[in-house]
Image 1: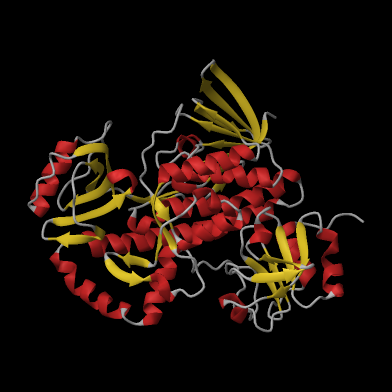
Image 2: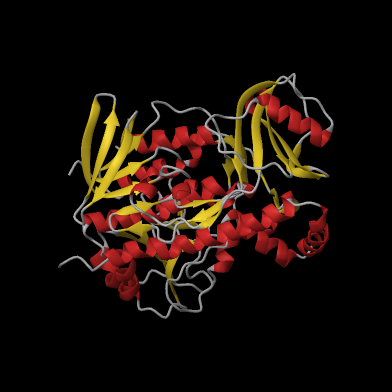
Length: 491
């Protein structure tokens, strides 16, 4: 084998997955067709959940000072995300190119083998491994790995070559995206619905302004090259009456509202993550964030299977957990598209939803949906409110030093958090000490302390989700550990 895992695509999902696999101690080769990054940025910023994920891996400081905000929207209807108590604020105006650069540097520092200018031509899964035909700077050659993961975007070659079904609906409209310089436009951060469509304006670093233009009735085109800026400026003038043709275009692109999801995230030894598994309208900036979280869910599971500490059953939970998340993502982006991009016939629905959002519970529900904080995985029955949910940031004191639930996840290992200094609990988990960190600590004050009131212990998965808690989980602790971390080590 040339590597345990080959990852195709060096975007956010591919780089995040490469780093996760290296933290799991697995050799990984990343194949990227492009010789260098384009510098283009479809995505901007991260949701609150991705902020937490980066913090849990110690990546967040790489971004330096990050502008954050609680202001968000659902289909163009404003929502104050501050209703989500105890959550980090979402990052704003961080270009996707910056995110990709930091993730690539992080994965590279962990030992990922990143090969640019290497295009995958074909692949074969023979049941014992995957063979890949590659065209690189020195010509064509083959590589072989135990598993191959396609993180190669919405037009994924891996998805097509491996025969994944990709049902859904085709695009019905085309929208323009442009980064421009030399012009001042009034911000329209969450967009503005106009008689003929929708426009959005947001400032970016370096004196650049991002605009998005959606003109209703514009049929989708199968483009081989980006649209001209003249097309964008003409559409802008038809919608707003303003002339922006004198602006200097930095980058111009077009996208549609096609909505598709593969029926299975894994076929044998070929796995999909990110846009290769799901495409949708980029409403609320959820696409890149969901892709990164796909990678975090997959990385530790695939690493455990490759190393032989867990069975294929664990890998099966990648599909069962993330397909459901992707399905919900497609549902909410379609709903937002109808609200935001439809004509006056939808105004009554906008008005009703606008009234509902004034109720805090409704605002919390929609904010949690868009930010990724609502996700709950099936980890078994029980009454504890955090079962299957993300572990909130909890300040801790243990062994004479201060730490936190976030810091304990930097190494991407499981964590058994003993909150009452229970030696019997620690002894029952001892056989898994090669895979989980057993930590005795006292919780400090803060929003998470209330959620854990009366809790004596918590088992946290490497992706930051609570797999077991006492009291309140119906599973016995060893049973829960074995489900997520495999059979115990031999004595």
